Image 1 (spheres, rainbow, N blue to C red):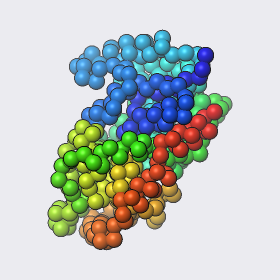
Image 2 (image 1 turned 120 degrees about the vertical axis):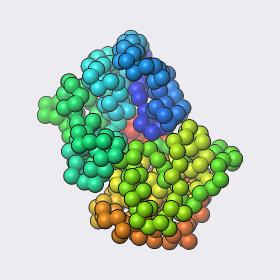
Image 3 (image 1 turned 180 degrees about the vertical axis):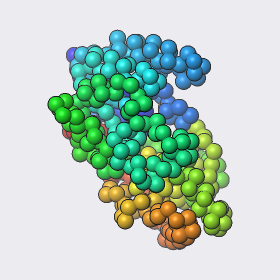
Length: 355
C-alpha cells in the first residue's frame, strides 16, 4: 500500500496549492477542505457543512471526523493546515483521535498559534489584532482556551514553518521528549501556471493600489484606515474592497498595479504571493528595522511601520508613489513568483523536509 498525504483544512489556499504540487510530483494526495470559510477557495472533500447552524456545527464536526478517521490508513501522512480546525472545545480531542489512525502527523505552521502569540504579543501586530479582530485583550489562539492541546502537540512528528517569519514560533512545538522535528522554512506554494488563466479574463475596473482584505487586525486594515484619515491623499490612491469569491479576487489582483498586503506582519502572505504570480507588485509593512529574510526581490515593496500615524502615512504614500513611477514589467514580477512560489518546487522541498 503506497504512502498517502491526507490534508485536513486550508489556510488561504496553502493546502490547496501544496497538495496540487505533491500530486503533480506523483504522490497520492487527498484534500479535505471546506474552502476556508468565506474565501470560497476551491474545495477538496468536505469534512462538514460550514453553513449548518452554529448549535449543530460541533455535532456535524464530530460526524465528519468519525468518517475521516475510518478513511485514514495506518501509513497515511496526516497534514494539518493548522491546529485550529474544529470547535475549540473538541478540537484537540478530534485531531488527536485522527492522528492515532495515521502513520505520521505534519503541521503546516503559517498562522497564529500559542507560540506565535508568545513571540508577538508585545508588538503592534498582536495589539491591533486583539483590538479589532478579537474586540478585546484575550487572544483566541492562546492554547489555554483550547483544552487538551498538549496531547495533540505530543503527537506531532514534523512542523513545517512557511517563511522565516514563522520560525521562532515553530520552535515552540519542540516539546522535550516528543521528538518533534521543526524543519527549515519554505515559502508559500502557488500554482502559477493555473493562475495565468485569470490574466486574460475580464475583471472589475483596475485600481492603482488594492488592499487585500482578510482579517482586520492581522492585515492592519484598521491601522491603514487611520493612516488614510491622517493623510487624505491616500484615500484616492488605495482601494479597500469588500470580501469577494476567490475567482473574482484573483481577477481583481491581476488588474491592479500594487497590492498592499499585510502592514504589520513583517512580510507578505498568501495574498501577496498570489499577486506576484499574476504580475502585480506587492507592498507590505515591517515592524523591525528591516524586512524578514525571504521577502525581497522584483515587485516586492517593503516600508517601515513605526506606529506613529502621520509619519507612517507619509512613508506609505511616498513608497507607493515611487514604485508606481518605476514599476517593473509584470513579466519580471511573475518570474520572481516562478522562482520563489512555484508549487512544484515548494512541494519538492516539502517532501525533502518530511521524508
